[in-house]
Structures are given as structure tokens and as C-alpha cells.
Length: 318
Image (cartoon, rainbow, N blue to C red; front, top):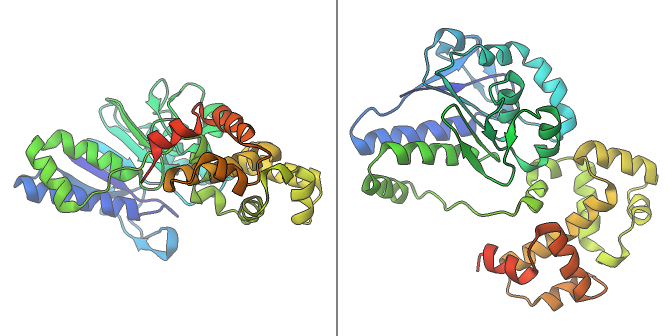
């Protein structure tokens, strides 16, 4: 199988390199050349990637016949930045659009935006990183979005959520290519992690969105406040902003009202306590400042569809 690893300006290349390492390891383990990888781009000039890394493709995308093209993510912190970033990559998106029908296109993290913009996800099942979900569903309604899945693979496209989504894509590919005993040995030798389950309601609090300075400050304030004392007026005052300005900025970054976002932040704290500790629910309620335990339980079930006890049973890491 011939796989293209796509380079473009400001892409995050670490996932491409790790993906390649996993494929080469499976080649060595099987004693066969199951996978052949190529760094491809729209140009053979050095590509300025994210984090001051410079890499050069060895093949042109439009001239290379591929079985699969893997598109990495780009560094972005808010859905509001997507239109500008995609416009800057119009040439690349057009080349993805014009790939032969038999070439499968795979992506993870924010790279899924390129596939959607190119039209290759039309009428296909796909997933995307949670904090992009609302924007992607709005902008690309022809895609059959399955947001609560970490990885979705179809005969034509494969998508995965999160910056480490390449790992899910690599594992499903390698599992299909090796015998069951060989794949089990591969997992053991490479010490690959068991993916951690996350509830869709809290995927939106991943690092990428919290990287925005305002959202970081807001999250810090909410974390320190009792749940029942959190109001938009109080938050705006602590951030030295008017309520209207805070509402506008938070809505632009998260596509959620301030009050809803703050409530979800607090419930995310509840979620973390349920996952990582054995502290009773009534104690969590008291420590996080809910007026009473029944109020916490009601809000938590509205957000997740699960009671705190059910949630802990399903997601606990203890």
C-alpha cells in the first residue's frame, strides 16, 4: 500500500512522523513491505511546519499515485480562525479535491477541515475534534457527522478526532494487515496505549480551545468559584470586561453562551472527580459549591445523559 504523508505550511508534522514509524515497525515485524510511505506536498521547496520545523517533500502530490493520503492537522485555537486558514490553503484543497476517486483520504484533528472543504467528505460518515463540531456541522451539512466517535473509517475516507488521532488510524490499518497474533505482538512491542474514553459533552475542554488566553482565564476563575455563585456578571467583573463584551468573545470562540460554557466547565470538574477519584458524589457536590447534591445530579444528567454513578462506572480510571 502506497501512502502519502502530506506536508503543508504550518501543519503539525509530529503525527505524520509517528504514523510513519508505526507503519515501518509493522513492516519489520511482518518481514514484508506492507506499506510504502512518501512525503508529498504541492511543492518540493522546504515547508515551514509548526513549531519551527522545516521539512521537504520528496514527491509532488499531483504527480504521485497513492492508495491513501494522510492529512495532518494545523495549529488553530478557535473555529473562527478556520475560514482564513482554509483560504490560505486553497491550492492544496483543490489538489485534494482532484485526487483520483480510488485514492482514499484520511485525516485527524483539524486536518479533517481540509477534507470537508475539498468535498471529499460529502455524503460520507466522519468525525472531528469536538470543539470544531458545531462549526463543521453548520458549514458542511452534507457530511454524515458522527461526533461521539473518536475514529470513523469508510471505504473512501477515514477521520479521527484529536491531535493523537493518527494513532487510531494507524492501529486500524495495521490490525487489518497483520495476523491477530502478529498484531497483538505489535501492540505489546510498541507499548501502544489503550485509548482513553471521553464523553462527548466534555471533549470540548481539550487543550486546543483552552489555549486561547481569555478561555484559560475564564476556566481558571470558574474552577475556583462555587458553582452556585457563578454568574455572567461576576465572571465579567473578574475579567474586567463588560457582560456584552464577554458574551461576544466567548460566543465567537466556543459558539456557546457564556452561562452555558461556564456551567459545562464546572460539570467538567465534576467529571474529572468521578473519573480519577472515589470521592462520594455528595462530597464532590459540596466541594465544588453546588447548592445541593440533587442540583448537581440533575445538571450532570442533562449534560451527559448519565447519572454520576453511571458515569463513574463507565469512565472511571481507578
